[in-house]
Image 1 (cartoon, one colour):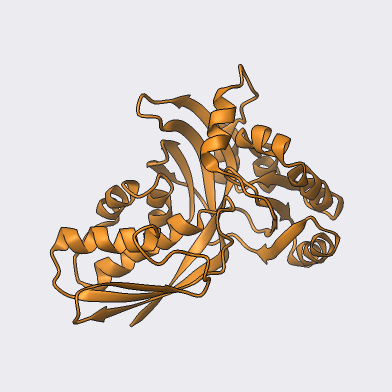
Image 2 (image 1 turned 120 degrees about the vertical axis):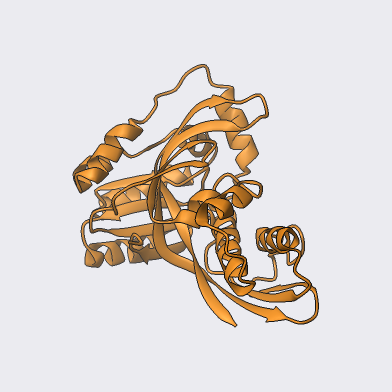
Length: 285
């Protein structure tokens, strides 16, 4: 039996630069893993097949789950006759813009590769992961990265400068497909300077990173859910040097210079609402 941790991610920047004929959107974004993580345990079994359980009863434990899909894909590619038992202890909020499902799938690819001695490289695992979801290749690699294309073209970046991060999720449902559809309907919108943020990371310049925070998907998600803007205002008023929505939403993150200020802000936001899930985390190095 082995245990692995699947970390949440935030988007320090997210720009949509076009749409492909196959419906996928071209993006340019900086991804950062944070310390909030799901815990997964894996055990090889003599009996073939996949047995997946989860601590959250609302999470499907069949082929709809990305963990199941990742294990099934790799085991079929290797032609293994054995099976695997997987338990997912869910801590990352579901459908929150934090890539919890993609991260779970990426960790599963790594674990199955190790358990069955498949010898696949990270590059090979990324190619398999892309068949499951556009965020999975980044989650296979982890850390801090520039993601381009549909998310599969990855450039590792230096770790984010020392800071603390508060994650705050309002109780709203944000269908990713609708967010992209609504963005496509806009004639024009402002684009973040993603490459300026990349340069700031390479200089270990936290102020530069914060000055270039930006997420074009927030334009449409926040219009439908004003809770997002309210949480950002709360975080800034409590000492955040920057705040932004992650992914397609609806989780908001605030960046703080020190852990003490971040924890105080997290307590305030949790007490005042509208956030229902609040975490104080750090970037994963």
